[in-house]
Length: 342
Image (cartoon, rainbow, N blue to C red; front, side):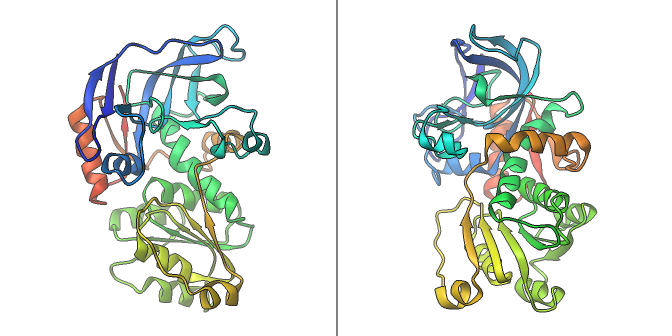
C-alpha cells in the first residue's frame, strides 16, 4: 500500500510502499476514505512535538470502511462505515479505568507513535473503532475525530454551563467546532477571535460575535461587550503566547481558560492578579475521550454541529500536495480544513 511518512524532522514527508498491516485477533483493518491534515501534523514535522519511531506514517483524523476484522472482534464487519479514535489504549490500567484513557500507561496515538491514516489502509484495535452513520460523509467524520472531538473535550474540561459566555481564540477547524458546540451546550454568547476575515465571517454564520484581532484590542472589546465582566470560558486553540495571554486576560471572576493549542513557548503569569484574585483557572486540555465520541457523532448527525463548511477542499494521497498543505499550516495562512481522500 501507499503511505506518506515523516522520515526526518524538519524535512518534507516522503511517499513509501509498505505492506498492508496484518490483522490481529482483536484488530480491525480499515480502508482509509478520508484523513484530515491537522495543524499538529505540521508541528510534528517541525519537531515541536516528538514523533517516534521514525519513519512514521502521519495522520490521526481518519474515517473509512472496514476491510477485515480479527477473529475475536464482535459488532463490526467488512463494509461497515467507521471513524477512528486516535488513541490506542489497553483498557485495563488506572487511567483507562478512570475513563481518562489519553493517559493510558501503555497508550499510543496513531500518526505519532504508531502508523496513522496518511495511507491506503490502517489497522487498529476494535475498541478504537466507532460505527459511522450514513448521514455523515467520511471527510466530515475524519475531522470530527480530532478538531471537533478536542473542542468538545475542551468545553467539557472547562465545565461550560448553560447561560455562560465563551471566547474562542483561533477559528480554524477546532474553533469552528468550538463555536457551534458551545451553543449546543447552552452558551449564551460566543466571541470568535481571529485575524482572517473569511474565518471570522464563517464563525459569524455559526452565531459567533466576530472580533478581528488585527483591528481591535481583543481583551478591551470582550470586556466592553460583556459589561466589564469578561467571559466565563476562554479557549486558546492556536498555541501562541499572545493569544494565550489574551485568553487569560479576558476571563472574569471564576473564569476558566482552556489551553489547547500546541506550542514550545512560555508565558509569565501573575498568580495573585490573574488567578487568585479572580479565582480563575487555567486548564490544560489533552486530546479527548472515547466516551465523548457517541455524543459528538450525534451532534453531527443531528445537524447541531455542521462541518460541511469547515472543509475547504480535498486532495489525493499525494506527497507534494500534503507537504504544501503543511507549509500553509506552518505559516498560519490556510483557508480551513484540508482532507486527504486516498
